[in-house]
Image (cartoon, rainbow over all chains, first blue to last red; front, top):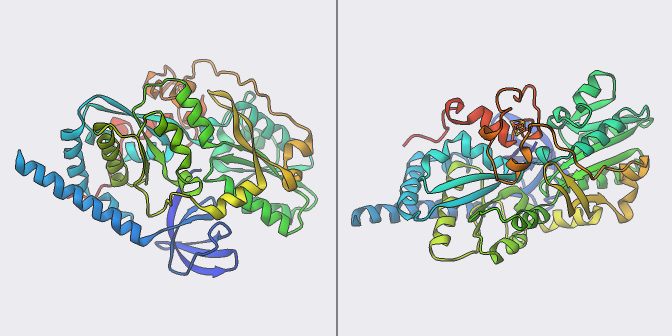
Length: 79
Length: 370
Ligand code: SF4
């Protein structure tokens, strides 16, 4: 029951919205994310969007992962 | 899928694994609190990517598993009332109480409806005005604001036949209870979606006790890099809260959702399967929303004296003291089709996850090959 998946917002009508993942579309509740915009990615849990994805933060985390690779490689070089 | 496949890159997974092998010096026990993390760990074979010095321990973060038998019994009692329609998430109906499950009650004629969301339960109330619809509300702070918003929805529709049987549980109370047990843990992979609502403040009790905390996402690289961050904190003698899952989790959480949750609910004592009564670890509709509390409407009380199921060691598993293969009933008398204890019922339950993914049964990891 704890499943929570990232979905793209493709429709907004007040507190109701439509979210999409792949080919699947689902009507969801937007009451917990009043500032959501079309095209945002949200985490959907039990029929509600609970959080809006922050694209900049996602990129930062991916950059950090790249750094891990680099620092690890340099450690290997030293050994 | 955006921001999913990027976090499954096998090349990076191997690099993190190599870094862990070099950097992890002492034997450590790290708890992943959330059942969602337990699934990801075993599904992607992450324990195989960790050096022997790191032991992962599952925690009590599966809401289905920690729902007490008494709460199941109360739901069944309500479902048998002629004026009640009981709405529940699908995986709750298989959980055994002291006298069977909601599924059995349904088969015998009680009015049990499976819903995907609390809003579906509100819809049932709207379409069945002659019935009192009781939503069996379970879950941690990820789910509690969703339930709270369904109460607001029912209020806006002027429905007087929608009620909550709240078996919600709160994370800070159980973290405190875990700490009090002296369970020999060195760090925590903290639940991403719970923290998306609550924010990180509650981890202060863990970091004050010298335990590094990293709030993690659910993809394999999220979890691996969170484990690496914990090991690095241990190495430099730090105990801080970090947010690996910053694409979803802000330090303050979702303030709007918190306000709705705090508006509808107040903390209340709750009984946990395997752990017993934990003070102020549940939520009850209160204040202006008290009339939505099914316990008050129907005058029922949840039995706080939780009884053990013979042979089942769920209680030790939920506290990170034992693992499913330590249970004599595991894979013999207890299977996902015919669960003895709650840890085998839910897809996120530790016993169920072990049953499906442990070693031989593991599915091919979806980590994208290098
Ligand atoms: S295998 Fe079954 S009986 Fe044993 S601890 Fe897990 S749920 Fe309980």
